[in-house]
Image 1 (spheres, rainbow, N blue to C red):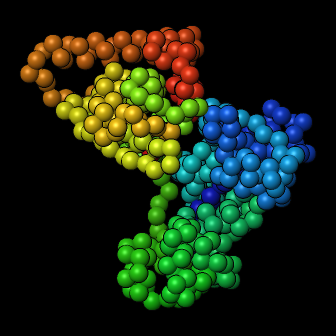
Image 2: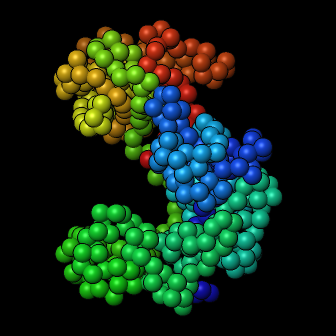
Image 3: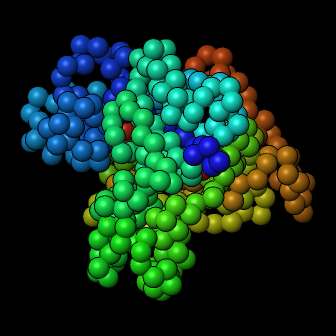
Length: 412
């Protein structure tokens, strides 16, 4: 691949579980999983170690399903702040080799090391050095894919696990990838795979050899994209670490320990969730021009509604007021709510000019509210995230800990 770009995709192995095992070495030789609290109806497997994987435990299944397969499964709760911490440390190792580092999620990143080959060797050599450094420094392992484009690098990191490097080249990608089931193609989900199989496209090679225009007719623009990907025709660049795209929304949601029932419960939930959203917005120095609410009922049906604002905001008061207004308008208050999410949407920089109100008092009140909430940010930063809370949320019995998720980093 001397004349090509050299792209790496680094994928941490069982990241959540591996980080938890650093604090629970006694579980290293036992089947173990990271799982939400089943008492709060969050009993979903988030990650598992290789031993649990050997029993057939899979991510996103319920705890009771997992324990039917593996009765001795040991479970620990998630600690998202630790995962974000180690993610930053590991990306710091990647940045030793190139500034072209593009995180794909908390445990995956692409690296463009084309310009780094003169200093550190071939793509495979760089991947092996990174794997060794992460393992020796933090006791964690990763699998790396090396290729001439991002898609094949990603598929390379999935090809062999754990703690392995797989190189996919222009010379070998047909032999390695084309015999694989079509469902293994990156960006081909279950629904897309069903449509392709209905046309006789069973493998990645079948897709690559199929008439491109026919695939577009079947799947639209996405069909053309995955046809190109199967043929190695991906030229998407890797973004620089300091030029990542700004987040597009900031939200917080939870499944409650009991169903919300009536306006009082809903107000408590909305206030707690809005506090987290507003705090995150201020942390990112952004404001929201809109508020979105997602409501899931007891039959797992979900509705989503949103409202645009005259002026952008990053205060919990405004976000909570608008979210409650949406719910009041769109939901029968007597109907129970299982899960609720509040999201700030249509974000802008916090110093973007806003439309002045016809009433000067409104602008003064909005400014005062923002200053008050920034003062709360300072108190929390100094004395801890639980040092100051809204009175209406303290002691709630719906299982809402609105500040715990401030430690998580939201996605774009």
